[in-house]
Length: 347
Ligand SMILES: NC(=O)c1ccc[n+]([C@@H]2O[C@H](COP(=O)([O-])OP(=O)(O)OC[C@H]3O[C@@H](n4cnc5c(N)ncnc54)[C@H](O)[C@@H]3O)[C@@H](O)[C@H]2O)c1
Image (cartoon, rainbow, N blue to C red; front, top):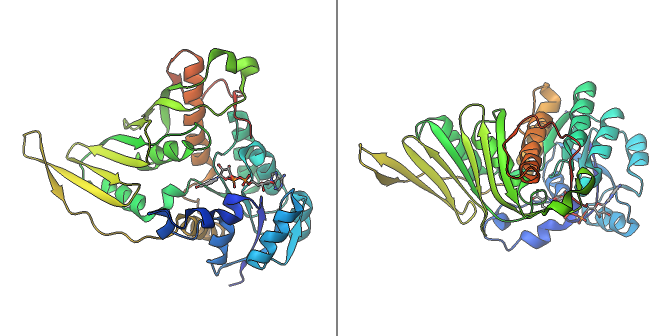
């Protein structure tokens, strides 16, 4: 089977160099490769034919590092000349919608786009529409959805190991768009990717920040709540250090030290006691490579990806919904949000 032609748009950290930063991280360093280019280089079913960046030096550095034959400073020219099967969108989110729509309209078969998806639900709607209209498969850069520890926890939940799932708690600090798009996507994933009934949130933004329905900052989220339509509740605990806990009627599973290990507790009898159980082992593997493999299979078979555009829009809407809830003084925001033009971030 011939290799799929890949073109990278955005030769920055996540596009090409972040592996150098995370190699000493206790968990991520064991799950390399991490950048899109390094992940394609580790995927024999793909071939990187070109890369682009508005900064010519970055294009050259990327070409040299990964042995990519051609480079461009205009992604449109690259897409038209190279006719790639897959594009990676690894720019900052301000132009993800523009690039995704352009690529979908110009013949690509698959898009691997970094989080945050975009800056407003209006932009998200254009991405969803373009991918659907042109039959383009999409996978999302919330790579925690693909890491073996999280995949195992979801499997244990689906197998009924903690009874009926009630609550998904994500622990983590950071800004709504840049960091916590990982948290909202993990809540969605662990809950079984259901539709969302409503969200409620509190952020660090102030009233004056919301002029013209546009907030030119990426606020921290202090409190984030999600009620999924299947009854599962998601909660964000703002604190240093990434972790996740899923709570069911018969027990709970919790990651420790960001997927370094899993604490598995089962309820004992009727008493409010829990017994520790040994969880199954899991390998340390690259979430990015799994994401690409999933995208390739979706392109070849016609099935949807595990982080498809509808799910990416859903987890993005949780984030923008938290900001909208804060703007409305803490009100519940039913999804789909009516304020689709609320624009969050300066990217
Ligand atoms: N999934 C993860 O774990 C993870 C980790 C880091 C960053 N990210 C995400 O990746 C995205 C990029 O972040 P980064 O830290 O790599 O940023 P960055 O600034 O290092 O890289 C972005 C690159 O895009 C280029 N660019 C801008 N406009 C362009 C255009 N029109 N055409 C081609 N190139 C263009 C910039 O010149 C820059 O080199 C962000 O959305 C960020 O949130 C994800």
